[in-house]
Length: 347
Image 1 (cartoon, rainbow, N blue to C red):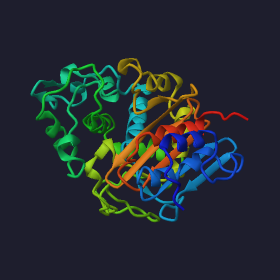
Image 2 (image 1 turned 180 degrees about the vertical axis):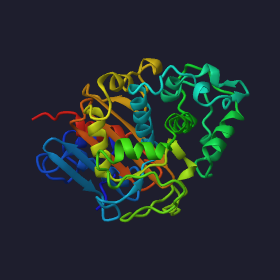
Image 3 (image 1 turned 90 degrees about the vertical axis):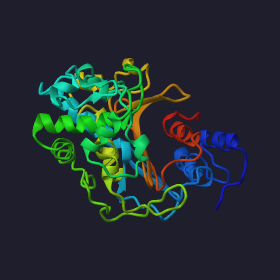
């Protein structure tokens, strides 16, 4: 049943108090669950779902039957957290250093139009401070490319100022190439060996060029309603190829922030945002909520799917949100929903 067309501020205030118009008391309906229908009525997503994970168990909520708990979906740039984790594991093993230049691992690749891999480090790729042009600005995330083609698309443009934060998918495509150069195996194989298998993420995969989703899965739509359930993941590669499930992503972020995947020094490095003035760490970024709580996670947007992950710094509480379209039209809804979940409510 559609929510009344009351002002958004009133709806969000009701959510943060633990009540949605016409809902049960907060003790019966968790506030984030009450906020979920707003993503459909206000955000114009065809369907939305969330899963929360904490020590007491998991909770699943959805806006209708179009999304099921076990569905596989494209996770977009949530892939970057996996790639960053593998790179930091390799750093912990001293198989590479974050201070290594890109040229050390990919000699001569980054050249032209003011781009120079001899002046860029792996740290600048991880933190999006390399200045490299985002290749998906040209492709709009619709053209399948090999990693080398993606990099060459980027190098046709001059870089932005090096050292400043400028989100670029090119950075993580390059990190995928570095992983392969260092290990002799693809980034997908390394992520499977180091993360997916140890954590028993049975619904998570790097599909390569496979255009279909594993079963079960629902449908995926662009903002204009076009069905894009079949999609070549090479439109994003190491920057956004991942396919996963709500439960798997919850398990991954709980393990990562809980210290099960990285030694303390590398996890601290991952959460260090000094280089970006608080905007981004390495494959994770923080969001400070109105109540003072800071959550860590990443969003993922790829044709037909939008995902948002958020967790407390210790990984004890995790929320995974997804909608089956490219994004949320009303961008105020996402932080309000996170606040509804992570900010304590008055008794």
